[in-house]
Length: 257
Image 1 (tube, rainbow, N blue to C red):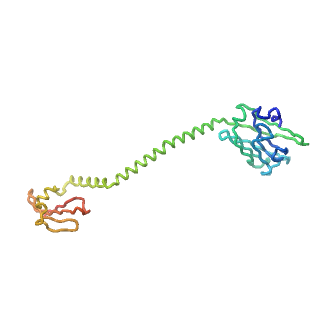
Image 2 (cartoon, rainbow, N blue to C red):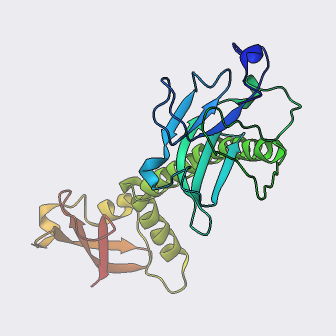
């Protein structure tokens, strides 16, 4: 192929070539293939037949070829089709171009007819474009930033959710409900026009220590005793709730007779 002659065999010159080969040598896969060469055409790093996509290099038809290299993912892709048809990906090979060619290179064409009589090669038009890898580097930095944010944010969110669940469960604990009931009782004691509250000592004295003589009757969850208080002098009925009873909020209930 001209540039890949005997003087450059073995990697003396750093180069990368995409070959369109219409002639089958003893080392080729067939007489209608594309390949990727780095050191010589006899030992391509990869090659694929064009017969699989129905394109014949010797058909005489105009053929278009597209070569894309993704420096971020180190992918070299070759697509081929007859002119006017949609391109078909034929060869996709992973290769680090930075290890194959120098940082500054020439881009162009080289060809040869060999022993094929009447063979000719024509390039009707071509275009070359490249983009700096800074965009890929920016994408990598952006991905790293997103990964860092996720590493920091996800555990924080999980910690906050865990704390909220713990606080919710603690507020629903029995001790919290008892405290709420106590708050209701305290508020009722401070409200206006509430009944007089007695201490257990006062009730025991009024009922003569809940003596049997003062017992008026027994209900489903407590016994009622007759009592007398001196300030002001008045008779009262005192209900003493059983310890096992779950009815009511208070331990005693007083009624004036």
